[in-house]
Amino acid sequence: MRKNHYPLADCPTMEERPARVTQRNLRCEATGEFRAPKKGEWYLSGAIVEGYRAPADLNTPYHIAKLIVVGQEEKL
Image (tube, rainbow, N blue to C red; front, side):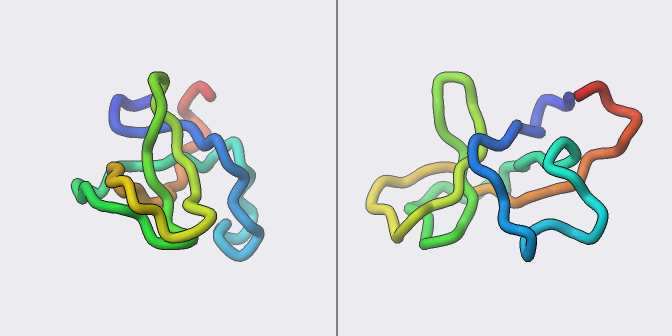
C-alpha cells in the first residue's frame, strides 16, 4: 500500500463505488484540506489512520479525503 493511501473504516455505498470495483480496491487519499467535514464527505482519522464518512456535519477539523481505486497489482 502506498504511503498516502489509507484503508477504509466505513463501507462506501454502491453509488459511491465505480462499476465492478470491490471494497478491497478502494482506499482514501488525502486532498490536502484540513477543515470540518460536511455530511457524507470522507475524512482521515485515528492513531492508525483510516478513512471515515461523516455521518453529519462535524465541528472538529480533520484531513479531508477522497475515494480512489487502487490496482490489482498492489498487495491488499
